[in-house]
Image (cartoon, rainbow, N blue to C red; front, side, top):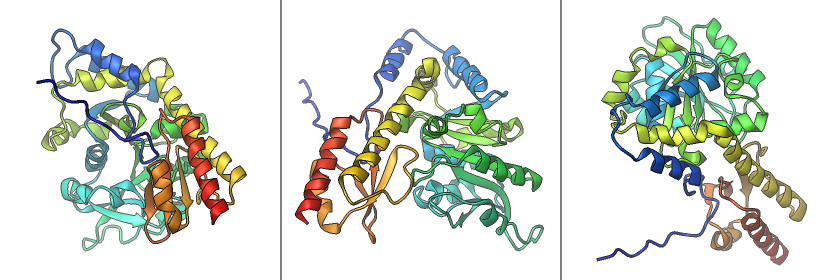
Length: 351
């Protein structure tokens, strides 16, 4: 019996995880779906992507595919941090707020949230947590995790990153970059992968693909090769070693060729800028934080939420203040944004 087609919801602004897979990624998967290939990363497609990663990050990078961003973060940090050590992160960091204590349970280290400003942690704040070094009663700070772009859609400048990395190195600390939307930050600042990471002193990157048009693939990229020594064992233990790795590699192969990553990021950033500009021009509202990536955070009156969600789905980010996150994807169109803006105007005029 032929199965009935599934009816999905109309495109909205809930998450770039909601978006469909980019056609070029689908085609690359189809192209890879022939003959046989060695498993567990021993295939030529994986080798090609690993080589491309080293070229883009301009160092002899060690890269490892995993299935999702939570695992990428847990494992990247576990490679740098022992069970008696601490990871400093933003108080709105995904690893702290949205990974269900996975880093602590499976990583085995302690997370210490640091008060952020527009989603970013400052060097002065980080320095204040470097205390009681050598005290056997106190968990020792070893790693700093920065999110780029941040959970609030803001972006660290390369100068800010370098200042933190320089200080971290002087204190023998590691720096991890949670880059689930890493390409967006690079396009936002007009920087290469290497300029954003290798050049400023980042040690390891959780390089995201799933939020950027891929079906489901992430890479943990070690720029500090020493930290990668035991990673293959850690990845296997946590169930993140892909058997048919060519199909994860095929997605990144298409994504990294011919600057597709840049095209996808530019499209979502353009959509966010279009919304930001339209909101300011057409209404009395404005985003709560600078719109520097593919998200805008807007405080809507509570009474508007239900009606706005009828137009396009989105998430209420803060249930106490009704700040809402409007997220744009590679497949968002200006017409979809404009219809949402028109609804906001209508509600504002009827208020």
